[in-house]
Image (cartoon, rainbow, N blue to C red):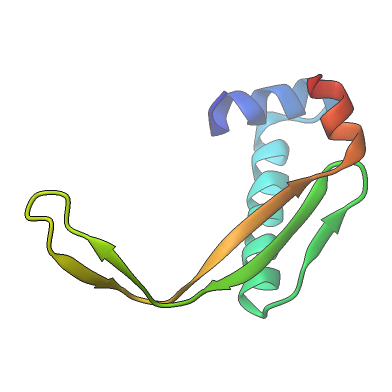
Amino acid sequence: MNKADLISAVAAQANLTKVDARKALDAIIAVTGDTLKKGDKLTLVGFGTFSVNNRSERTGRNPRTGGKIKIAAKKIVRFKAGAELTKKVK
């Protein structure tokens, strides 16, 4: 499912127009990004939790040459599925 499919499904499920569903989805994505950028968690009970973790600098290998390379530290987004979502997938 891509974003357009999700918008169509949300519009049908919530009895909204596709324009309103797109606005809602875009707002959710924007708020999620802003929340994570601040370093806060976003918890949606039954769905899951989005959080930011710091990955430290590490040494890796260039697969072509076999030489060592430094991989820079960075922030990564994590998602942990909630219990209800996990039950639906099983």
